[in-house]
Image (cartoon, rainbow, N blue to C red; front, side):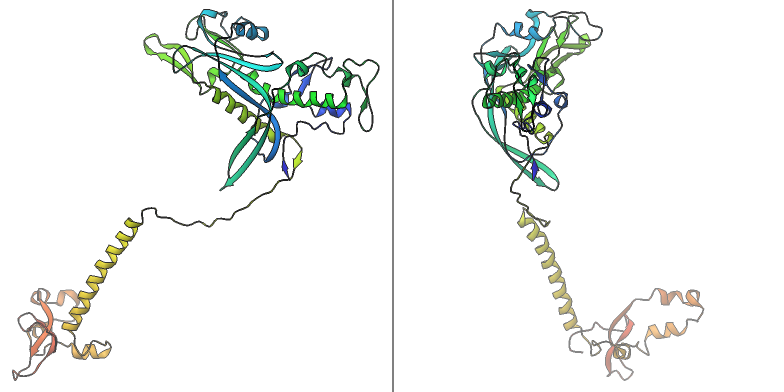
Length: 404
């Protein structure tokens, strides 16, 4: 069981739970006002499975001559910045955005100074009732979410946007299984119609969390008459203010916007809201266990380095074995025989010098003995005939050759 967003959850169907599960705030007569305070700040959430949510279909358009009027239907033309007394100037506009109903649909129009062209660009977005299919993947505790969206029909602004929308519910009589309308009904919706209005209002709530953050206006940026109202767009990475060092301030502002950017904003906002609901849904979880392993993409370098080292070592080993075969002695097996067979040459110079040393440590060693060059080689006995291997001076010995 995983969390999911169920915009059609109305609790047990009573009027009390009808509004307690609503994502929007209603007015005194039951009209839709705005998103509930719980959704003013949206955190990152975890989701799985299929759910209903809004999407935006945006496209570039020509200038909307009514957009300025739509913006200031909601907002004042007097700057709300602290210490600023400027007012809106349409001729120096850099950004305008506002939602409004038109033709039975919820539209959201934007006009902005484009970073690509330095001129004003225009966009219009329609709110759709869509179906989201989310796929969540965790790799080393890092979550990756991908979403497929099946677009539905545009939200019915004529039905959802009417005044006193849920007045009948507010005036109803709660019952154990639902509610009963009183005599003061306004619309007298059927249950199916009422639930459709509720569904659409929930989707409108999610859409408004984005739209209300972007709506507003900016004009005369970088001047004494700089004006901004409500919108947060200038504080995002999509805004590119131009700074002129010679006048010690910003002189202009541009925006890197497009239809796909606004559509992705809506997707991200929807995903961020999904885990808020207490509703649960079952889904299939696929768990894969991975074992860490080192992978060398460039195998030639790996094999070449280790192969070269192995060949070099093998060559030296072969040379060493060859030297042993050529210069071996009968004492090659080790043990005490090595000491017996490698004694010094009794009549040699080395022994004569060694006999002159005392037992007093290093100070008792003659300088000639310290500087003596010694090797293990072939020495000849007194009779001049006996030859054997022993330690002696270079002058008293011959190089040891194979066969001795």
